[in-house]
Image (cartoon, rainbow, N blue to C red; front, top):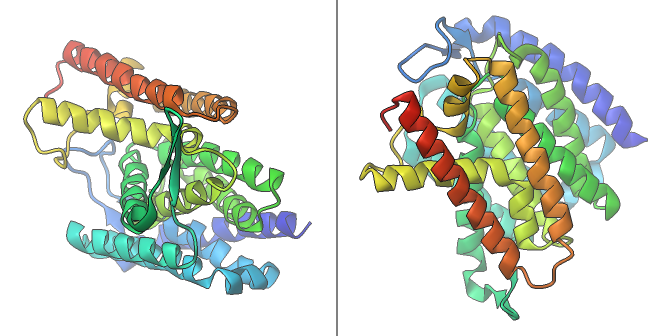
Length: 336
């Protein structure tokens, strides 16, 4: 019952806070100006993430103070990533600074016991990370956090895909009575639901890095936590879309002898938006459906004790999507 009360309060408070940010954005210098990679043509408020982060941050202590005390390192790490995102929305900080912030937050997760110690059983051999657990966890969190950040390219896309993923983690948390998973996923689902009222096409505010980096970190935290109940490859499927998109883009850039960190308009959502004649809502709903399908597959694959074939299946989907997108990019005449 407490979770339901918290959900309702977070939803209502998020609406109020996001509305405040929307109207104060020009004064606070939180406006996204159009550029060559933008989907919008007019200056638009950003940093909607301030609203759907502060709402859970303000409500959660009243209902789940014991949880915050028990995992204060993880909650502090989440606040650190949020702060980095706000600073980037305000003054476009250097990528190096963002990486340092996320890496520091990842280490704090490990200190709180949220760390990847094993990645499963492959060809009958358990893969235990040992001393490599912390650096691998940092790599995974940084990678997934930025992958979620990169899909924030269409109105409502990052929020919709994140809602789907968070719902899966809420189900896992509820099934296994894991209060950390339940509270984090439920409160952010409430905040994102409120945010979508403003961010659905045509958006009147963007989430900014304060939202996308925070969401990516929350999803990373929950993904690691869910390893207590699901195998690693199943968790890959549960968080698949941002990962598949990032890998397919990086492969294409490498094949074209470009920097894998360079910016372009050749992500899945860019290509599919053109395929759907710039119907943003259709593109977003299609990608959310793809994520749902990945999650359903992930839930089924958890029955496998050896994850070798499951991993091969996941890597195969990356290559299939890469080849499909490459063909679509060629037909669209894009320079990637």
